[in-house]
Length: 71
Image (cartoon, rainbow, N blue to C red; front, side, top):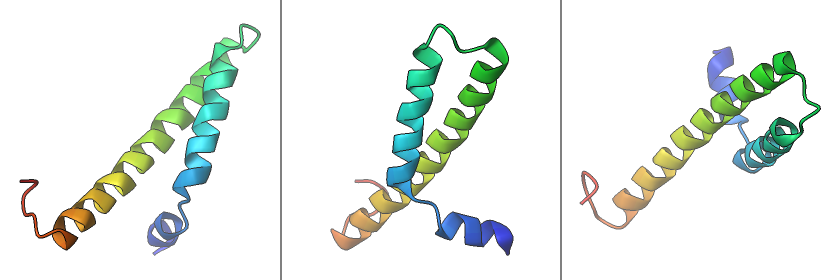
């Protein structure tokens, strides 16, 4: 049940902002390797969540426009 609640509160706009922050920190030459690995991992997880949400939106749009199976 907790996973469902977490998914419902996912804010894609905030996720994109966080991914941008992560990219900036990864580009900073002063970022330590350990921190970079943690940031990269967080970014990958956020990108995956964004992808899933966007795929859901795409599917809804296909249904609304009468398309099936991505035609």
